[in-house]
Length: 259
Image (cartoon, rainbow, N blue to C red):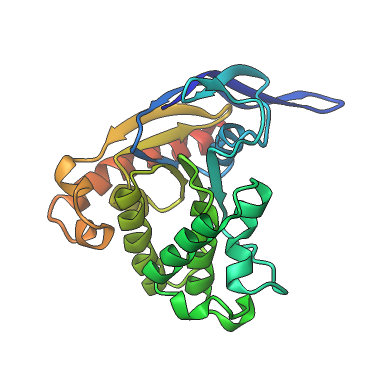
């Protein structure tokens, strides 16, 4: 569904050229959930922004369902750390924003979005304003806003990192089950190895200076078939965590040694 070929991003200043990412090659299957992990500054969010069409690569190309990505597309939804709900709009008006921007606002799509709002436990909050909701509720509303235009590819940039741990675990299960039900393809940027394992089919570990994909881990199938909270309590979860952690630690130590 998604193909990244020889992606490179170079930032130019008056004094130097800085290679942010280099030689990024990746194939993502339809319905697959990938996570990007790695040290801060390794280019995870840069690659996500390039996939979203928000940042042009210096070289290389990205194709989504065979179409070359040259800018933002209706086929892609993006969810960030902050919910970015407009405080002066009701929750219903907020979740209709994507439909309005993509010229898909009609009775059927509005009805579908409100039904999803009910599924995510916010059916009684459609006339409320964002400041009347908790952080977890606001992120659920942001998820509905992203899903309302029915994008085929979903991009998540640390969407749960600002939440308390209990809310984070609840949202992981909710997002996981919703995306599986809708058969969505998703990529998550996270610093949380446990979250990456619990949510993903595959995990891409980034090296740095410049950012490259050092290794791809296949999450064991029996973990992939469980809800994130259940997967975290599986006997095989901790050994797999240690395996990923060791590789990440090697990358971080190498970077400290180079600096």
